[in-house]
Image (tube, rainbow, N blue to C red; front, side, top):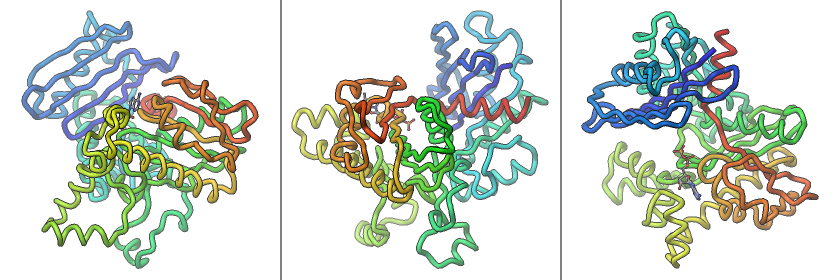
Length: 397
Ligand code: ADP
């Protein structure tokens, strides 16, 4: 049984075909610049051969059509016939309060995803475009929606509500939703397996540190608190997003810089974070290099990032009444030993003590804590695609 996993952005589409017998990817690729000049599909076959196709790709339906053509290609394809693909799993960013789990897509589910467009105007529309394209080109093949927000639906009301007038929650559903749920769920389950304990017995803090970053407190396998909020703008400062602010700063900047709501939204999402602080880049590798060369603002950006992550871990240990394991995942969490070390420095009061030798690891599941540390620090590469495929498989088999 093979499952196609699709993750649609406004002008991009990532896909992976996963064989559920082996849980391995048998074809992976990326379509970029959909609807723009210079559209391109890059495909990697199971044997690692790379194929680059440059052609006109005006919309997501054409993009999916091309992906399906590539997947059955006799040269670099992954299946002989499309009928070998038994279901499609779609990453959907916002499921609002409607979905605490993944769901087989029918008219009702589609309507609920459409209703969430207001909450995720940049993300849900391309997700919907991907679903509609697959429905059109693969009629009869079950489609499943896997939501970034679903894992966090277990948060208690006192954690997800803001200190706003309660009627705003009733009228507009303004509350904390949280994102990266698929990743937090996957790494917390892997952590339980690595520690040889049932997830129900563990208090875990998962740090998904990538272009977008979020930290989650997981008690007994359930998300109880997470740093992203109503939108992915809240929490840690990120590549280009400001993260937490005094809300009064927003209106202050708008007045001072004469910005309208769309402009301030764009500013806080695209021009801030470590890019804004460092003035160098949103990419942590570039910032690390600049810091090594003595750039003060680059060094400061890294220090703010590590300091904020440390504060989240401390506050989540308080929320959990202790912590058994801290997990690092995603681009930065998996690869940057210096950022992991900076975050975990001076946290021995929580039983966190990193072994500097073990911490040199990159991108491999590893326990990097000292042998006798009471809180384990684990590096676990995330695999959102596999989680989406497993949910899709479970719901459709
Ligand atoms: P996305 O949110 O786009 O999926 P990723 O999880 O791929 O992001 O993370 C991208 C980030 O990871 C970038 O800022 C990149 O600089 C960072 N990164 C990747 N490798 C390293 C590394 N070796 N050291 C520091 N940062 C790294």
